[in-house]
Length: 136
Image 1 (tube, rainbow, N blue to C red):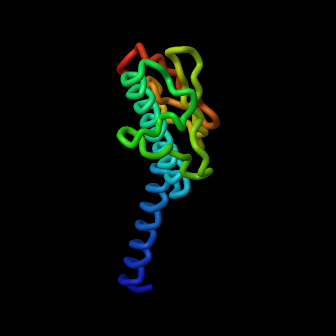
Image 2 (cartoon, rainbow, N blue to C red):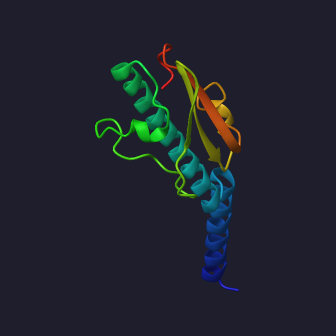
Image 3 (cartoon, rainbow, N blue to C red):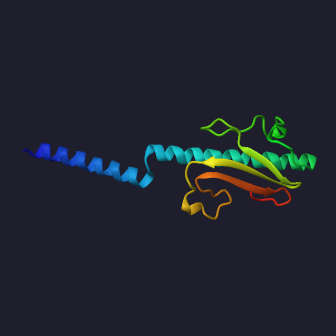
């Protein structure tokens, strides 16, 4: 075996190990896609809760359903789940309280455990009181 062939095999092995380590550390492309979809869901739910709070500030009442949030200023259409294509759940739970819900593919990263938007995989609802500010 000549030196060039050994060097080429060594380079291929190093690149292969680097790719395997990179995938192990960051997760597979499919896993990263699921995490990005969950991040989109959190952003959508954040947008929805923001629109509810703006509507409360305008009317001093919560809309009975999500369609009542579409005003062309804060929300021109209802956000939908990027996979199912279904709108997120919005529900009034008390005269000044509501919740928005979504279904997540993966749990939040452990480093976000103290974040309001932390979630496990599966269906998760986030509760709000319009008299409390600062979580959106």
